[in-house]
Length: 415
Image (cartoon, rainbow, N blue to C red; front, side, top):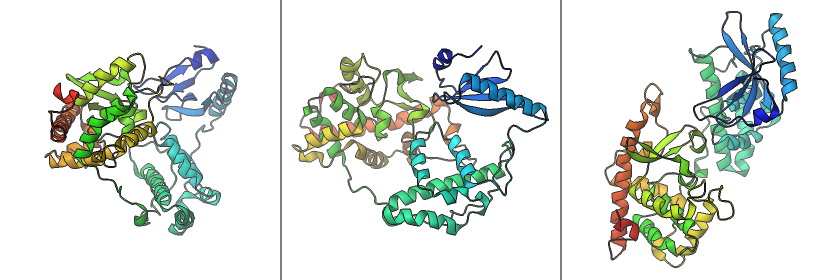
């Protein structure tokens, strides 16, 4: 089809993966739409071996339709003259900047992309201009030491960021299944022996108990806004998931797998950047039934009062918990973000295998082959995680009954 601005702006991303739309006027010109909504111009061509390849021309709307067609024609003429549209950089000339650009291009859909951009801003210009394979441990120390003097914790983050980038370059060099059009000559990681500042990484000082969670569940309705306190209850019910995994839930993400009610988290919402399906507990389902009366008209399960298409913020939940716990010492220092550590401990004490707990909390797990949790089919994983969800229901019910003189709050009575 012939491209128009209205048609391009109307293209919607697909969760199944990127897709391309071809142009009628210039053969080989495509517009690729990524799952994150980015739209980029690409040109399809064949190399000297007849293998189909794509070269990136630019991003829409920075590169307009007419400019994209003109650039595609220039590339096609260059290919006809025997030029390589994707020249292979010399191993001894590829810079750190080129290595970082290649790595960042693979992370544009990751949840932590903006955070990685912040880390990159801390890198001095002379460092990015150095040849990647010539970077030494002394160069890395010169970059990290000034950061460590001001903010040691942030220096640890930058160290991890750089170490990952060099590992990316090494994987390109040694991966037999990867197309060898791009290489940086990086065969060793100069950051592998640099130790993070251990004193900068302080463990969380707050340790919640099940009594704290039961008290929070019982007394949080005293907060006047129903959607807010129901959001806190929902988070408590979700066995230690990250706050944003539960807080940003939308009604269209509530699905059913193998007869089990779940939340289907899209790839942009998870820390790993991969989609995940997590079972709902009976407590969580009871909360959803109650909150539906308040938010059934909204996209978000827990929307803001002033913007129903925007979910509540963690700041709002923390402020609500702080206000209520002033009158109830049994809540301790309860805040939503501290529930995760408590859930891990209690599930372990309940006899749940640590592997299942790691799966439920989406911790990084690898097998010998490096495939990791991708080896699990969707329904089988959900059935495994349902064991964790059921165990958490039992733990929470027991805590609520111990805390209350009666069997517990109204939600417990219905279980």
